[in-house]
Image (cartoon, rainbow, N blue to C red; front, side):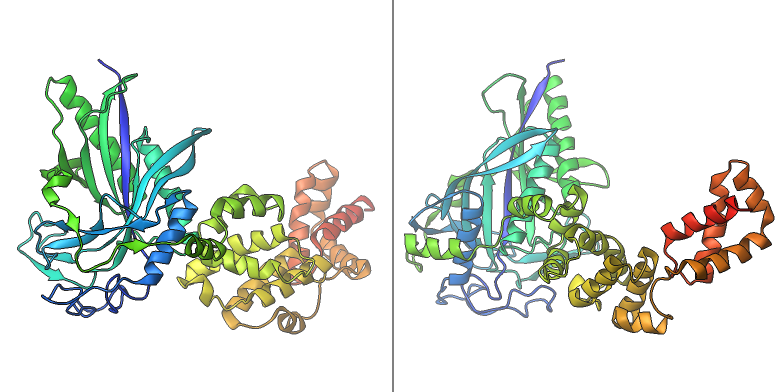
Length: 485
């Protein structure tokens, strides 16, 4: 059988994180009643005139800079004409042959290799509305569909890659990297479930080593990284089977059905001329000056790769802890608030508590990290006690749970719990001697070479001291007292 090479390009629609829509003042907040966030402009009443949202433009510029694009000084909005029930105007305001950004680049790490994925363009456009299907989760099998125009005219950027992606795994890695950049830049919240980040994949195959592109199909609106990767894998296999059986791949728009692990035909793929683009007569060309670009560049947050490097090289975090923080902006902000306090607590130790014990408590309660009752100041005060030896690691972990439940500070819990970690040898020896006298069999086992048997006595000491004994000292004293018997 002929070996084939996949050729994949990704078109990503990212909702720009603004409070109002692209051409009107209606709210972009998700979850409102159907058609509540609408006005004559975003639902296309005749005579209503659009006014461009400046903040949306600045965030689009920020995305272009983060992806290394050329910012075009003049870009033009156009009307993309097509009919669909969720598009009351009969056209979508987008950008066509003169986009805001072009010629960018995104690097990903795949199989130990750096892969460079070129960005063809980033253009601005408004979103359409949404069809809500009843009787079935999809349009197939539904009894009827209702139109919700809340999303109509929500600001989007469309990020179009070149066909540089060579596997479903690379497509997923590209999307993950892109999501991280857009979130860190404050451009998009990256919520795939709410539809604020959506991906369409253009998939084709060609004989390995060939340079000519094959006929592509477009997989629409995959709303998870898993669905994106699986859908592309399934479509690649479908095309290979078609070609090997002597059939040809048709240019189509398809959708991935995760339940049946198949892609299904939606419609024949449109070409750009089918949309009859022409310049939007109600909007002037968008002119972006070099000074405006410089202002936006100066306001940009730290890119995720720069932040990861800082975590590893300056704060000496493990790669795993750094990646967990990078994946959660709220958690990362909490960590940053902790380490800026110059408490003397190593940043790596802060990270271990934040991504480990504290993160587990937050997830268990299903609350945002920002609503966590243990403030950065309280966590640092607790860890400072641990660093001084005032509390043991077990005490610190137990205190953290109590702090999370009650909101109390570590010092309060320390006073209420009987004081600091016990390091007085005479006090500990008295407890150990009593336990050894009650457990002579443990003494004999340890003397016979079974040193691990001493763990039972250590556990009993920790229990008797309510976790306030210093574990290393307890072990040393247990073994010492056994040796004298």
